[in-house]
Image (cartoon, rainbow, N blue to C red; front, side, top):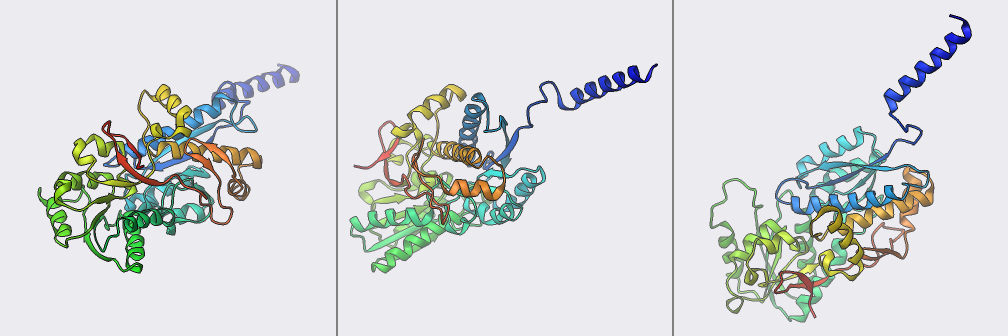
Length: 381
């Protein structure tokens, strides 16, 4: 074989091997992988899966329109923490080990307290979905934070002119958000001279709980003769408490915290049980005028009704892609800088402007909600 023919053969072999490794169309850059962390299995899976679908929808739209600024497509890594703080660091290490530099999540504040510092220390930029203020830091969020929710709850209590409040609180290891919310509200109420009792509530997944457990805890709280019952739990516990509450005419008004606002809550309660309390929180996407387009696309893509938090991860993904395009880079510092400059973004959850100093959303769509006869969460009038 002549030197020329040998060279041509070697080049052909090299080209063939490159196709085996990279596949056809390998002229395109490899997809940018982002993680979506949340409770994708377990008792809070309805939330976690809704959040995952919200990001999937944003990614499908982006990729269908050519991807990022350099033509790079985006792929998702689903990081399932099961809403368990003990899994937080393990899940974060999985994400870090895969060379992923962006994460949307986690959702549970207890998980975020365990792993957000690990993400940030390894230059993984979070768009966190946690609400406990202690989880703030590098990155950004479109999620309402405790310090933004508590004043709305305090104003509601003030309007009722309450003197005594009984709290039922998930203050377990996985209840950082619920405990943080109750602690903030208790401080606000005490400042106004309101007496507050605190009854701890275990998670529904706890081992060995007697069948009367939630009814017993409700009875303890009501034994203090409160003017208002405040329930700071996640929705699985909220369902059990709603089922245990006496009729409204026999007990005081009831306010449930934001983590109970979920389609799974109304699905597992009767109408009278669901309407027994009002709620602090954000309505489902189907009740938000700003989410009309999102709802239609979500239903078309997944043949499911969207929940509450998928619209927030959808907006999180979209402002992340926007920041990457503006920075023309996937560098941690450059993308964070662009994220913090987000202003007037018209999202499914309303207008999003990020505070450049904190990474918090400046105006959050939180109000006091009620459940309609159709079992929908809507703002009270």
